[in-house]
Amino acid sequence: MGRTCIVFILMLIVVSAAYVGGCRRVGSWLVKEDIPSHADAMVLLMGSFPERVLQAADIYHSGVSDSLIIVYENMGAYKALEDRGASVIRTTEQARDAAVAMGVPVGNIIILPGDARSTLDEAVAVNNYLAGKPWLDTLILVSSPVHMRRAHMIFKTVLRQSGIDACIGCSPSTYSSFNSDRWWRRREDIQSVLSEWLKILSFILFEKGKIVYN
Image (cartoon, rainbow, N blue to C red; front, side):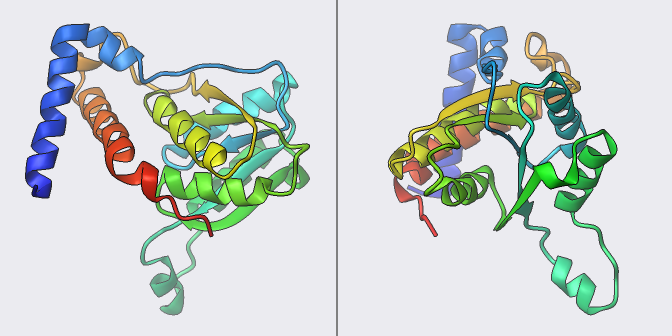
């Protein structure tokens, strides 16, 4: 079956779900929120980092968690720019600097190698870091609301398959403009919802059974 055909089928599933379950539920289901009373560390997922790092800073100041984990994000031709003399601040470093500016001590921020291109790459990098550290058993994922369900699904799968027993909480950013109750009224929200559903289905169908642990 060709990729175009698969994408069409996945889109049909999403549209059918919207028709059967109601448009509102299609968007609201993506927003998973489950914040424990205390966590050993937050995991700041890369992407729309301004809204996410704001949320992480709020969690830090609330006293729920005082450690922040960030995985280095792949920036494509970043190295080629450096080779040509361009000075570029990586997104990961911008997120770290923003967190520090908002009061998170730099010593409390752990940046992991990973050159991550996806949430799955970030999950694998965090999994590798947690291996051999049983005292780190409660995490809070910090991300955009529309990304939260998939992020939790991926992290839970990666950690469970590798034998790491950890509680994974979720804190969707309150600084996002995404409206889960009226997502069909804005083009950006429509694109986000459809994209997330496709990525969730892709993870379940194609990626879940092929996770590579470095």
